[in-house]
Image 1 (cartoon, rainbow, N blue to C red):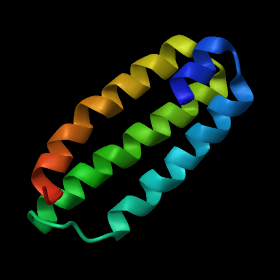
Image 2 (image 1 turned 90 degrees about the vertical axis):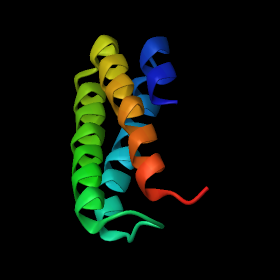
Image 3 (image 1 turned 135 degrees about the horizontal axis):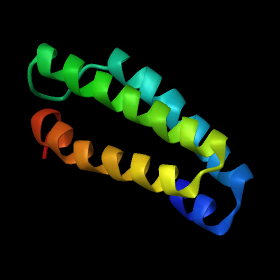
Length: 88
C-alpha cells in the first residue's frame, strides 16, 4: 500500500502506512524468534528497523522513486530473515 500510495500520489496513505511500518520495525527486535540464534535475530531485526525507517523517510519526502527503492531493499531482506527465524 505504501508503494501504490506513493505511485498514485496518495501521500497521506503512503505516509500513514510507512509510519506504521516504521513502528513495527522498532518493535520487532523486542520479540523472540520462532527459531534461529539470538545473534542472527539481533542482526536481522536491526537491518529491518533501518530499512523501515528508510521507507518512512522516503514517504515523508514525498519521493516515489525513493519509496520504491526503500521498499525494494526491505523486500530483499525479508526472505533471509524468514528463512532463519520463522517456523514453516
